[in-house]
Amino acid sequence: MDSLATIVLKPGEADRLIAGHPWLYEGSVLRMTQTPNDGDVVQVKDHRQRFIGLGFYNSRSRIRVRVLTHEREDLDRSFFVRRITAALQHRRRHLSGATSFRLINSEADLLSGLIVDLYEDVLVVQTSSLGMDQRKNQIVSVLQELLSPKAILERNDMASRRFEGLEEAQGVLAGTAPESLTARLNGLRFQLPSAGGHKTGMYLDQQDNYEAVSRWAKDGNVLDCFSFLGGFALHAARAGAKSVLGIDQSAEAIAAATANAAANGLAAKIQFEQGNVFDWLKGQTTVAPSEKVVPKFDLIILDPPSFTRSRAAVGDALRGYKEIHLRGLKLLRPGGVLATFCCSHHVDARLFEDVILSAAFDCRRVLRRITSYSQSPDHPVLPSIPETEYLKGYAYEIVS
View 1: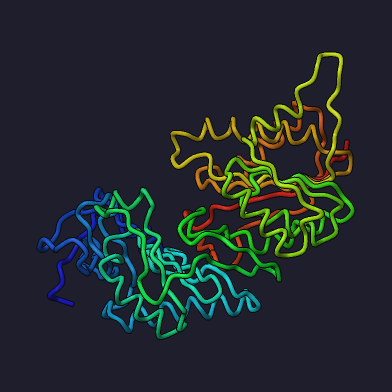
View 2: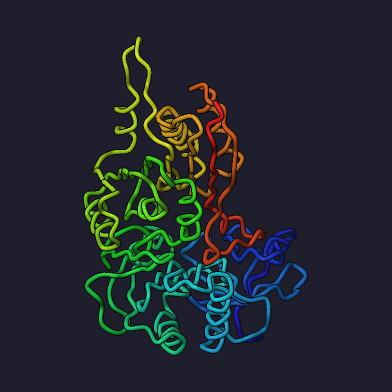
């Protein structure tokens, strides 16, 4: 370890790392004993020369070091075997019946900069840090050893890679790429293009919530906004909804969702419609001054993509959230349920609920909160790393 470059921290900068947060920013560095190469393993010490941990260095990133361990250990192949094995054991314990799930969720699994999703027998890898990207072949080798997948795909098309000095990349890292990916969630089969979709292909973080929200669908008319591949819609139809309408602006998503409904024998209950959700809701709730909006739905699901990637855009995001809730609540029948989600990290749960209540006030609705939702356990939350907790949701019943 003595041969490694040492990053010495300024006074007061060590506590956050000791508590478990892995990001060491450039402004926290007091000095370096030598200049490492980008991607090298470095050791981090506080201003009193006490050992803090080891991590990957990158001079091109605002996150100067991503700390991976607080032990004096080699960050070699054996290290990745131990960490990936631990991540797999966590999923098998908390999602014991799942065959598609997020296997590694970056900081939440103590592997900052690495995401791996399992879609049945195919793995999809994302490396968002230089250090992880340089060790991609080693990681692939470990994944092959532990899971023996048919294929391992690379989906490194995230804009965030530019901040690490990395170019976007897609392709096959091992095996033969399938024509499409398949995910089985709660007994339902979803097919998705291997080169398209959101994240690595599907929102696996909603796996538990798809099932939980469907309990409110029986014998009701359901509206699923931002339906994407039909996760909530198909679960609602299977749970006994009379009818389900899904809205999404992506023609590709609508085609895939329609095919998924047919493949699961649910096409008779579900209709998918392409359209901008904001425009669609506005069209359904705009009436003459002498008219009233006629509520049509017993369950409305709002699951939009993130409205903000930065704190500077929070104001615009809140206006967007309020708009869809205001319109959605007007379409919900008395006694009906609104299930709503926010995946914007910069909008916390309290702020999100404040927006919902503000919308309810404006349209003269009284809400009863009946449950709350979080991300599925394959997206673990480490309280010492606030960034690992991003998905929050609520279900409300219309009281009056």
